[in-house]
Length: 200
Picture 1: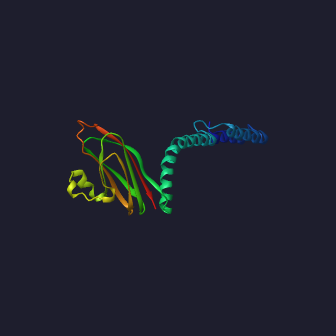
Picture 2 (picture 1 turned 90 degrees about the horizontal axis):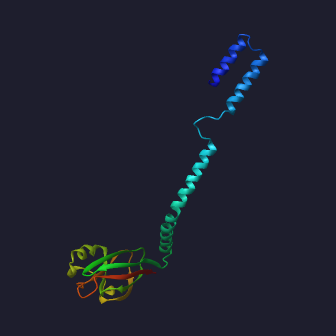
């Protein structure tokens, strides 16, 4: 029975004389106290909701934090280094290059400075290496080598150990690695360690 119905029933009993004033007041107080003490069915308490929300937030933080930290730390470090023109490692990885193929590695130079590129063929064939502007990439992809404009300071032919450096302006560039071997009497693929650093 709803609270309003119980209170109406008590009032009617009082009006009919079945309850004295004191009995009516006592019954009404007991009904109100009973209603306050009864938990609402189907509605979790606020503290339970708060506990569940907190647990979910902690779990979400534990899942997201490692990813955010690794990506965010690297980006933050690069942003700070760019702002103060501190040295930055733009690329540090090992690439696999099949015989008789070309691979272009994009690098973004965030400020003008000296770019040092180091390549070491860990295993495989000697390579041709070029540095080009982003607008030359289509000519490289077409294999139109006669019309590819590259930076002469960074050019090398048939090398396994490569280290070049020169001053470059801010912008996008590509390090192009070309393996001209056929893979018959040579390795079928090369593993190449690539490191690109920017210094003010």
